[in-house]
Length: 164
Image 1 (cartoon, rainbow, N blue to C red):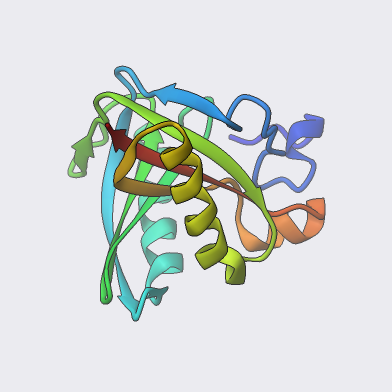
Image 2 (image 1 turned 120 degrees about the horizontal axis):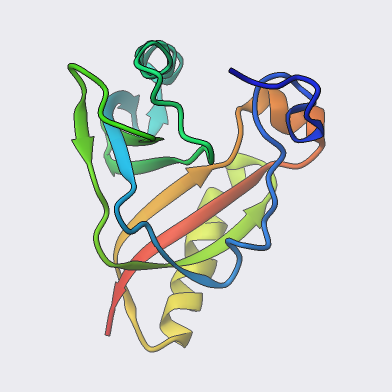
């Protein structure tokens, strides 16, 4: 349940995002558990995201599995589909679960989603500067579009599983 009196949740929806712990960092998810869902896309544009998120969040809430720190990772793995991973505090009955092993280089970007191509290029350069190459790239959309508009900032974190 969202505490609407908490200034971090002033919209009553998404928590205000602090980029400092995520920008230019190495992140390990340790034993964090994620619900895995599939989203239909058309040429990388999400088509069923709203329905999938609504259904997943209803089941996560009903199971009492809302994570204290909201994290939702997006894996744009094909032209016609993407996987989303929603951090949960415990298993959710009937849901596929996943964990992320290893560490990820992270970088925070701010702006409209139309800049995604530029962010990916910047992330590739950032990872190359560290002497590595991207094996897998995830997007952490830190809030819904309505909250991004309300807060006046639209942060996206790119997380790269990188190898030498």
